[in-house]
Length: 240
Image (cartoon, rainbow, N blue to C red; front, top):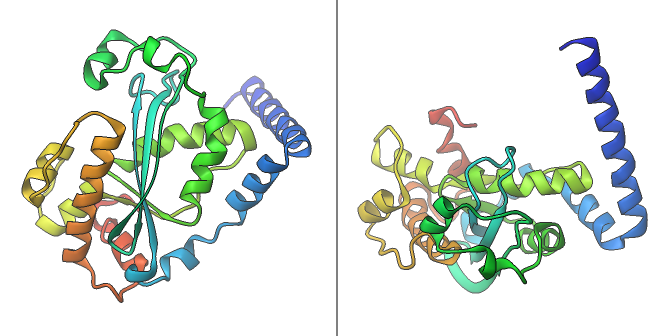
């Protein structure tokens, strides 16, 4: 990195810090969110038995695949499990991305600009999203895709990112089946005996991921084993 790039990077960090503290000073909810975000202890969460842990399954639909190249969330769904049982608690919202949704993306998830025109933007939703996730273990199919979009917003607002442990159902499938490679939600659902309804909607895909997770987790760990054992099932694939 050249001198100019280093200087710009330092200035950027200082501006982010200054803006963060201005926001925290004027918005008690954001301050609470920042303290919760930075104070979360992943090891304590991972030490809980599976049966006592809270899991949050997440799925997002977006304008495209580039979280750091201008794409944004247009829909999000989160579902709560206590142990491996769905509690019925959920968070489901359209999101105004603040930009045009490309036709290529609309053809996938069916959402157009008019559908999200009156929806809240992600910065207004992020406190509610963080509150719902809380100290849960975040679960999803290719879950880091979803987390990249949320972390981008959280970092822009507060200079922090989610520290929650996460579990990827695709990696659990590799561990459970002994296979290698890349598998779509449909492929994993079929092998796991899960029927997907409303594919490529945040709610439909989150429900499918929830059912897949419950099946695979039960195959891999016992209810009295710690969350860390489930998380470590992914380590053999070089993702942890």
